[in-house]
Image 1 (cartoon, rainbow, N blue to C red):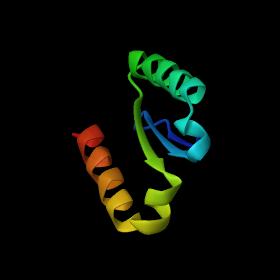
Image 2 (cartoon, rainbow, N blue to C red):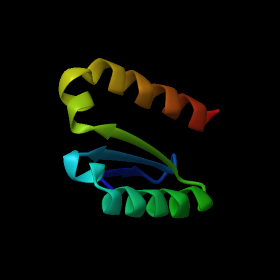
Image 3 (spheres, rainbow, N blue to C red):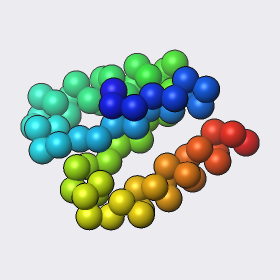
Image 4 (cartoon, rainbow, N blue to C red):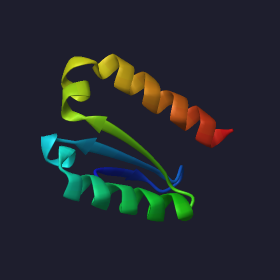
Length: 70
């Protein structure tokens, strides 16, 4: 878990290329399922998204925050 906001029950993951492997993808899916079962929303971004489309990343985070607050 890279970032977590307990008030919103929101987890933000920033994934590098290591997460492209089947082993990591399986672990990520298991962890996400566990967090979702505990009412924690997980959003994922790749390093590339952060580096090249940060405005889109920020907008997506804002959307999720709005949803969580309503």
